[in-house]
Amino acid sequence: MAEWEGKSKGTPLGYKIFIFIINKIGTTAAYLLLYPVVAYYVLFSTKSNRAIKQYFSKLKAYTPKKIKTSLFSNYYNMGQTLIDKIAIISAGELKFEIEREGMVNLKEMDAQKTGGFLIGAHMGNWEIAGHLMKIYTTPVNIVLLDGEEEQIKNVMDGAMGDRHFKTIPIRDDMSHIFKIHEAARNKEFICIHGDRFLPGQKTLEAPFLGDTAAFPAGPFTMASKLGLPVSFVYGMKETATHYHFYCTKPILGQVSKNEILASYIQKLEEMVMRYPNQWFNFYPFWKSDKN
Image (tube, rainbow, N blue to C red; front, side, top):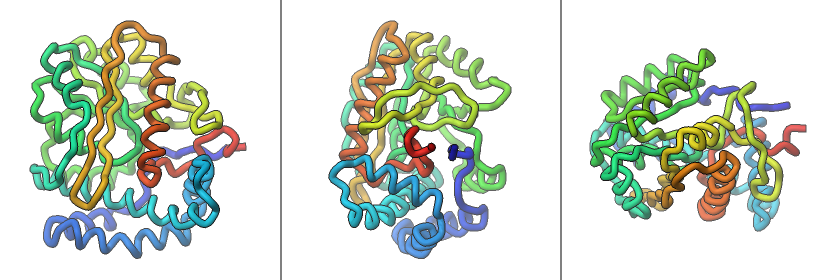
């Protein structure tokens, strides 16, 4: 059974080259450099290519010809969002126009000091959402799968400098559970993705795009048990200079993990249908794909 291995693709040298170009020349030049990089992955990254094609096959409107052309677009969009992420954090200021949908939901949670779970996906650009949250006083915790190679993490940390939020890496010793509980007690924001997990972690199965898929149990179980408001957030790229931020109306009260997951999947399906080339899960996601 093929699974995500918890490591990002790329090399420290590759990241350094892009960071240099972004800081010295700009994002447009970095976008141009993506073409040979993307072409390499389209030609030689067999496993991720197969997974992307499987994903697009779930979108009923996609013909075999359209799936082939979308392969390049999917890689290219991921490259653009990574470049934008570096540009946003290293510059310390926002260079993109943002259409804001649902910001009032974040504003109310911040004003009422309720804290909350903000569950996203490996779609678009989380850093857009993170940048918008600078205006709020509620502390922000980003829960991350600790799967990146240490050298790449060091390169990125050096480029990004001081962050305005705290990170909680998911570790085998389960220390992240205690930190998440502490953040919940302090009524802070807990930001976590709901569409990826490491081998051996508990999962919940549910229909997604017409086929059974496994989702990490952790985000939905903790959100249910801790009883904080739960919103789903996305920062989606629409043009070279324009993003669209979404934050749903929060789910309030004691709600079961399966109910939260069902609401999450409903929104995720809506987003992948609206932005099909911006979901970046490059491994077999559905149970039928793994057999």
